[in-house]
Amino acid sequence: MKATLVFALHFGLITAALSACGNHTTPTTATVFPEKAVTSKIAPSKIRTGAEQTESYLPYLKGKRIGMVVNPTSVIGKQTVVDSLLKVGVKITKIFGPEHGFRGDASAGISVDDAVDAKTGIKAVSLYGKHQKPTTADLADLDLIVFDIQDVGVRFYTYINTLQHVMEACAENNKEVLILDRPNPNGFYIDGPILDPKLASGIGLQPIPVVHGLTVAEYAQMLNGEGWLKGKVKCKIKIIKIANYTHDMPYVLPVKPSPNLNTQQSIMLYPTLCLFEGTYLNHGRGTLFPFTILGSPALKGKYSFSYTPKSIKGMAETPLYMDSLCYGLDLRNYDIANIRKEKALHLQWMIELYQAYPNKADFFNFKLSKQMNNIDKLIGVSDFKEQIIAGKSEKEIRASWEPGLSKYKTMRKKYLLYP
Image (cartoon, rainbow, N blue to C red; front, side):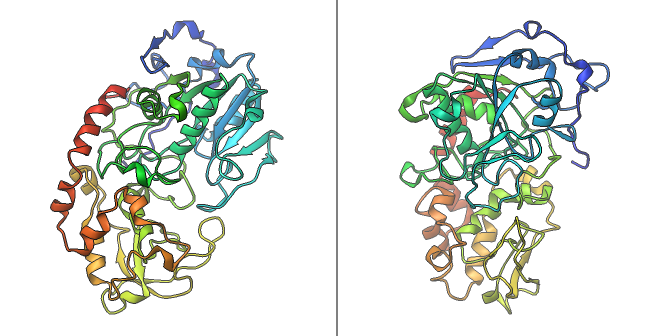
């Protein structure tokens, strides 16, 4: 996991005809373009993202008015996919930005306005502001939507919600979506309870576990195949698969996927530590180490490690316990190889910190701060906090996730594009 497994494709290789790729149509209205033979300049063992395989999709973009659903993770080598495609004459008419915006400079949960991108002069429509779903007017002057955003494989990470909204809008307006697939850094395991539909929200829309084990393209196929799009519409999608990829492969992201997932350590710990957004603890927001440290002023005397959250523009302007000394756990040096070995959420930290917290009535009380979320909506079920309060063991809590989790794992197999 030391080296970044992303390699740029030189644009001198992009002239191959699309017809040479071959198509395979799945029952979920997806056309999958098989990854092409790797050229002699790129070793066969190297992962190539969908975006990098320009030879597989540039001919398909030719002459079309393109809308791009992108953010700073949408790169080919060191360039954004928008800049790269503009250079070779692709007609990008509109850009759509998810949470944090197209340029990735908005903090978590902050509404983003429509704008004109200063660098390209292209209209940038926010899908995390006045509306989360493209309107008919937004799509009227487009022939094709390209979706290229790096996900981290967790239900409450909002980019898969953006995918759903885009697919619904495109299905309703007879537009096609081309998905440039990317690896899932947490794709090697599946864990957590299945979301109770009664708890569906902006941090979880569909009945999937916390860690879902899918790439964006695989999830798109599941949305179609399970009839989860609003009105059970089906979106026509094409997929550029990742080359030389399996779910079990370690993958180090070349670009931070959002402002507070700024290290590989944070990305690997995120599935577990984001659950602490539903507690009266700071989880590193307001520091340069979000999702790797946990603490509260109330834990003074319980832990020796301490830190002070500060206002950081673009990351956390008003973090919980701002300018107050917090005490708790330092997981910056936690061996994330344990996660790959155990393939499970680490519930023991939640159990430990609840037991250590002096005023237990406050621990899950999300009414105490606007910086907190409802733990029920984060974990996806209403009995988790009661289990923690009752002192249930990790084994007992996990047992309550069945048989839903096992049923999901079986259902998931229908939509896999990779081993």
